[in-house]
Structures are given as structure tokens and as C-alpha cells.
Length: 391
Image 1 (cartoon, one colour):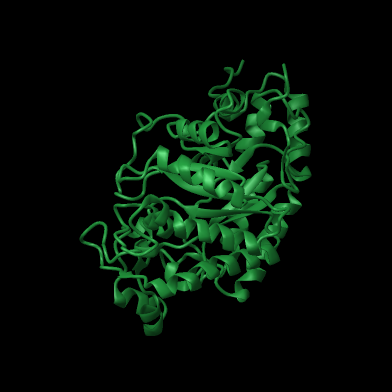
Image 2: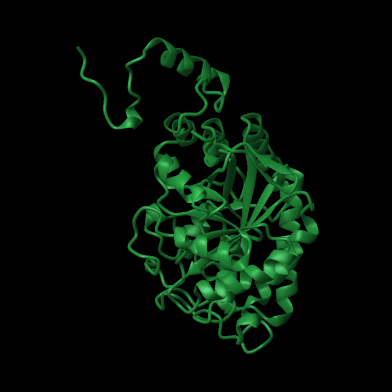
């Protein structure tokens, strides 16, 4: 049997991934005034120790008013660097590559956490948790003064003069990410957040050079890519996450066009997701089932000539391997399945017949697992779906 592509190392610029299993960025809503906590160290660390090749930490906000909730991770101040660097050091010590996603919530900012209902935050809640000054500073901004859904608070449209300063904040965030030691950076241009809001004719009704035509609506994204690349070393890869289909006026054809524009500006991989603009699940690629977003990665890869990362209900080892073998994507990213099983990469390697000595995980795990596998020949791990009846 040939070596599985899933566990074949991959070079991206000057960075080598030990395998092609990527931990997709997942909001944790656990920061304290933007600062990383022990939760972030534990959460990212368990995926690195579980054998992932690349661990992308969650959407980390480039400015204070871009925070989605009270618990969003921040990178708008140099003071945030040490806490992030602590996470990077631990990820790297486990043999994984540390990545970070840069984001800005735009009009989707200032909300209760999802498990608290996700509704817009009240002034009282912010004042009680933080202070009155934080409420005033936590302004909702967007390309246009449009709320979605209509029951949400109305954001303020960014002025033309404010946009260059905002773009520079992305660049400074990239500089801080480099200083913290991250080796991969991803720009969040999906899921109804600020860059996606500018891309969308549903959210962007501007009549200046950042609105109207498709190219004008792409302008902020293109300038953010340029600013990030100007502050991010040439030997470190850059990803861009897109909602390839949002069912609100932005679709695969537009995403292909944008991918073709960002590739020569220094984007290496398009992370292909969907939805987030209208709030409803996107089913343009078929029902929400195993690998339902993989067709987006396949199309962007084929038509834009750029590497892609597939994400969305990638659950099983054989499924992930077939996506790569069939040339539908270059990387596979998992999110909720890793919440269910943080050791998924280790488990997948066993199921695909590689890594008999459990070298993918740290020695405190590998020693005992290899010993058990060697000594107990008829034992079936719990993730294999059943065990032999005890005699």
C-alpha cells in the first residue's frame, strides 16, 4: 500500500508540515480582555499532541471593536504577544506547526457567546463584565449601515478615510503574529464577518471605490492581503478563508475570480468554507452531509490554479485520504470532529496502516500505546466501532 497522502509531509514556502491534517480555527470565546488564557494553551496543545500537522488557532481580532464577544482573542496590542507566544511554543514542542487566523467581526460584533444565546450584547452586560468605556469603544462598523438580521443593532458605515487605517491594523496584526512565532497565517474573509461583508452585494451598498462593482467590493480584501504580506515574512505561508458560496450574491464564480487575484499577491492556500451572510446553512453543493463543502475546494483548485484546503464534516480517515488522492484539495481541515476526538490524527494514522510505533504523538503517550498494541494482539480500540466479545 502506498504511503497515505494524508501522512506525507508537505512544504509550504519555508515551512514543512509533518502531515496534511489541519486543525481548523475554532472560536473559543475564552480570552480575558483579548488575552490568551490557560484554556487556549490546553485547547491548542491537545491537538498538537494528538498528531496534527498544522494547528490554526482561532479568529484573533485585529482591533478591539472587531471582537465578536466578551471572550474573543486579540492581537491589536503588542501586550497580546507573550500569551500567544506561550501557545506557539507548546504547539511547536509537540512537533506541529502553529498557525493563527486574523479576523474582524464588523457588524457581527458585540454579541453574547453562542451558548448564551448569541443575541446582541446589552450595555448593562458589557458594563458589568468590563466597564462603561468598553461599551463606547465597542462600536459596530460595516461597509454600509445595514443590519442583518434586521432586528440587530444598526452598524455605522465606515468612512472612506477610515479604511486605510483599518487595513494597516491587519498588517500590524501580522507583524505581531510573526513576533509571537506563528509560522502560518490565515485571513478570515468568510462567515459574514467584515471582509465578507465588503465582498457581498447583500451587505455592501457603498457608492465609492469600495462598493458597487465586483472588483470594488474585492478591494478591501486585496488591500488586506497586501498589508498582511508586507508585514509577514516571505518564507511563511498565507491562507485566505472564503465562504465560497453564501447564498446571498457571492458564489463560486466570484470566489474563483478573487482567488486568481490574491494568488500573485502572496496567498498560498484558499480555505474553502461557506455561509454566514444570511444566517442559513448553504446547501449549494448538496445536503449538509459528509464532506459537503469539498466541491468548493475542488473547483477553486481547478479553476484558480491555487492550493486549497477542504473543510466541513470531514470525519473519517479514509474520507480524508480520498479527498487528497482524488486531487480535490491539498489539505484537509477538521474542527468539531477534533473536539470529539483530539487524537484524531493519531487514530487516522493507525487506521491507514502507518506509524506502528505511535511516533506521531509525544513519548508519554507513544510508549504506553505502542506497548499495549504489541502485547495485546486482539484488542480493538474504542474508535474502531466495536470490540471482540470477552471469552
